[in-house]
Image (cartoon, rainbow, N blue to C red):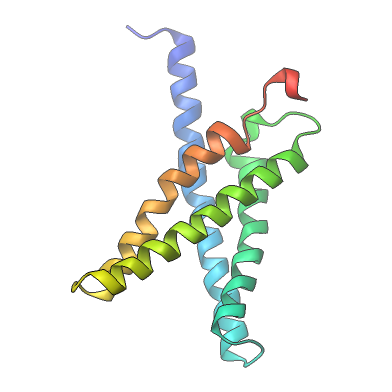
Length: 143
């Protein structure tokens, strides 16, 4: 039977994963809203609008994860280090998503929508693991 400490750790990690998903949805909606607004108002073309949406969503995502999803990992003086690390993970996720989608569109005869859904679906797991194990994880000696 699992000890109370093990059960508590599992509960904390499960809660962090749920919070990560909620913040991810909010950040994704923010990305889409900003990009669509900039595109539809004629302020920017599609690619620059998408980059701006990504940058605004990054701020939403980082803030939510730092102050809520992974608050149990936060240590004094680690905000900038966490932000730099999370930017690497977020940018890598953006590149991974784009690469998988381009490959799908160019290499498969299957529907584009399926490729879009697939490319979106594979990134969150990598992002969660990177955020949990690296971006927001700081040992006491590192602070």
